Amino acid sequence: MDDAPHCWLCGRPLGRKVEWHHPVPKSRGGRETVPLHPICHSTIHATLDNGTLAKEYHSADTLRLHADIAAFVKWVKRKPPDFHAPVRRRKS
Image 1 (cartoon, rainbow, N blue to C red):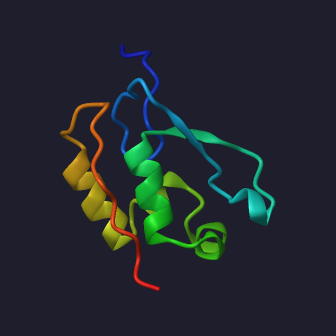
Image 2: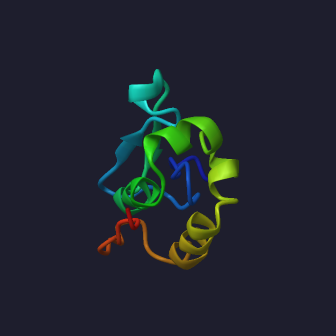
C-alpha cells in the first residue's frame, strides 16, 4: 500500500513542493486545508473565483466534474510529481 501523501485534486503523489488550498476559500470562512501540487493549485484559482469555489466546487469530486478541471486532471495525471508548467488565467 502506498502511504505517500497524494494531491487532493489529481491524486498523484506529492513532490518536493506542496501548496495548501482551502476548499472553501478562507475569505468565505474556510478553515480546512488540503495538499496540492503547485500546478494543481494554480489551475484551480486560474479557472474559478472564490465565490464559485465556495458555492459549487468545494470538494475534489465536484471540482473534477468541472470541464476545464477535468481536462487538466486528465492531462496532468501522467506527469511526474514535480512537474510544473505555466498556467493560463481565466478570461475576465
